[in-house]
Amino acid sequence: MSEEKHQPEWNETITRWYCDNYSEWPSNEFVVEAADLKPDSCVLDIGCGGGQALRLASAVVTTGRLVGVEPTPLMLQFAKEHKDNVASIEYLSGAAESLPLANASVDIAWAVNTLHHWRDVAGGLAEAARVVRPGGRLILAEDADVTDRSALSDEALRSALERAGFTDFHVVPTQRGDVLCYLYQCRRLLR
Image 1: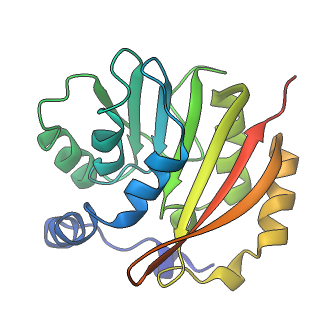
Image 2: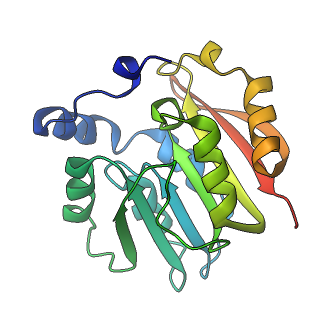
């Protein structure tokens, strides 16, 4: 994948436009609904953008930990400014390929429409495997209309997830209105 195609210049105008247009996007809801969260869950949002998925998760995760990692300073600033008085959300600067979290420290990690932005998919999946506890889950959500799915086929993604240490891979197409999202779900190996 070319870097220009997947690493736009995130200036203030583009960041605000993106957050205004996609923060309430159904894919955030799809992931939170699929996550089967508990009040004490420890959740990581990789490439959290404006933080909407974590704000939605905060309705369920009341005693656990909600962490968003975002590489784009303006997105991170937007997320922090729009926490909606949810003190339990922690936002950290970082990228999928170098997550600023301890080993086996989260129950579930997700990435909503960010996989296609990762500079190193294998490296990002390895980092996700490092921070997700054994038996924990990873959900990668990619909207059909914004992702060049041929760039990473389902089989190539399955293979990359297995190499990273994930198992029980399955794809759940989820649709609301005209938004079709593929939820790639798997579980961290018990080792």
